[in-house]
Length: 210
Image (cartoon, rainbow, N blue to C red; front, side, top):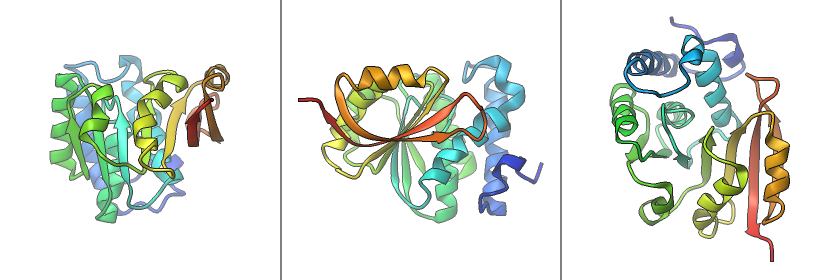
């Protein structure tokens, strides 16, 4: 395969990036047979359900930035973001994944694709003590919005311009309503280019309610 799915045709994707993404997909499908990286029912749709879904995060915030990807698991969206940053030759993704088997997969993926990323096999709560700064936080299928805000707050306190980019399913409004009980924040809802019932929430100017 040497072309991208039609969903990515609107993005400026180099041949080098296509090659890296193809290498990642091949590696992911190999490892997914041995360890649980995503729901097995979605493996046949790796490109559309996972790669394209992840790539839309970079499309929303392109360019060289420092990312923290929480609960990186199978590398979505963190490794995909790191692959796009490799095309920039700048920027970095800190992949936070406490599961040692998944962390080993992520390290292998970085070596084989040249993604601009590193793996931190630690608990998310410990990550702000290891990773001092970031410009953006991503997470996919990890936790409720309220919990993700709590995870990200230490970085927000160091960077007023930090933004969250969070994949959410059809129940996203419930999560927003719950978060509004504890937090103040600006919110932009980006329709998913993959799933009609899904969305990417862009959160900025986060602070606790007084």
